[in-house]
Amino acid sequence: MKAESNSMDDIQIEPRDVRQRLDRGETFLFVDVREPWEHQTAKIEGAKLIPLGQIPGSLAEFENAEDVILFCHHGVRSLDAAAWLRARGVPGARSMNAASNAGPSKSIPTCLATSFFAVMPSKARHPVHSYHAQQSDELLGLLPQC
Image 1: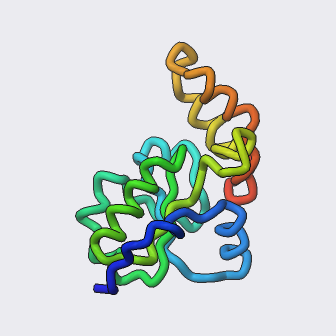
Image 2: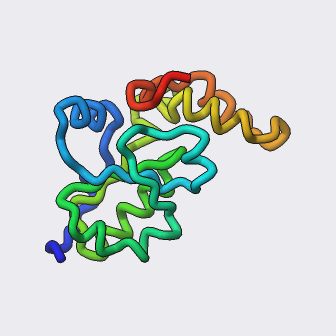
């Protein structure tokens, strides 16, 4: 097990940085912590599906990884997973920031959001989610074109 990291300063990574690392061919464990139905709706090539509820049972896999980048729809589940992993001695665990500091137009990817909202009944959609689905562009380079 790797030494524990108490710092949470670098727990998030921006999508553009992940894109650059992928483009350079860097090796890291890239994990989608969403549910299988979400993953089937839209996925990022090269990402491994390990739903949030299965993270504890997969701890050994994470302990053996030098660098881990987790992601989900809004970045909340992946941030929870990264913090949980760090608390258990996986200092390289980071969450891809789906709610980018760049503002509302830089949050969830349009392709992912469009696919997600296509399967969600319109009456269940929150106005903020609809806004993000229409305005998002941060992660488009990571996702297949719709």
